Length: 428
Image (tube, rainbow, N blue to C red):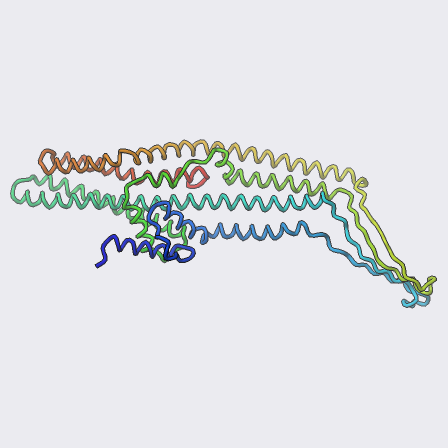
């Protein structure tokens, strides 16, 4: 017969096979702690997330396009015919030349900078998406585990009250207890049943969100077993480690969607201005070829043709000046937009930091002596009740208060994960 521990191990091993991008080797152990489970699910989420996949596809296309910046212009081929006397082409002239524009280092550099701006913008977008995905996964996992802990705690309290109800019912039948005490226990159990039904709904929604995040719609049993395993521990310390140290304010601002997009637009505007300035410089082209002089023009003979041409920007000096002024205005406007985005992001981050501080302080409180004290005090209260030194009403009040504390402890994990995600503009 397979024991509960072995059944849990089998379920966890099956879960790893389901979620892993590739099957785990025989030497790899299934994930059993919060950090290992989070890393396992994150790998699956990074593969299946459609937004991240689309961004990576755009990045690959942009990098391929960026390689075109170093490709030179196309060479042109020209042929000219001049007929001889009587319209005879064979006795006339024939010229065949190849021409190619000269691309200077300034124009090449401007083209590379413009392509690099687009690639860097997508690089920053993917980095932000990956960070957001990790935080969203943490929030979904914490919500699932927290709801599961609450359901288990409500069920444990109901099981204890069921024993108390049976005992009180027997004592009432013997005239040793009041019916009011029996009603109190039944009312308490009814309230627990209602809370459990509500929490089961929250748990189903949290698991659905987590399942959607990792792209495993058919892994209900495995995912549920994983969450049940993580919920078996009341220790909040691993969640503190998973959330980790908070990044600096500048790093958080850099990952702000609005500021990141504004900076990308400003960088591209500057690169476009540089390209425009380069295009307005004198453009040189060279040509080389052969010319055949026909008999009707003093031939026959063959000679070499060389040529050089250039544009004259000074002939359109006013137009060029106006164009550059417009480009300068675009750069200035992009800089103002970046400053506005930074100020807006900093204001939003201010309140998010306060929320994160509060949530982390509460989680650290539950990770300290409060959790251990709650368990020991409950055991002591139960002992006093069995010894007759604590009344049923006093025990119910104590159990109700302790239940609230333990429920809030379970919810503190999800609240801390949600608050940390809000630092990155998520879950607001």
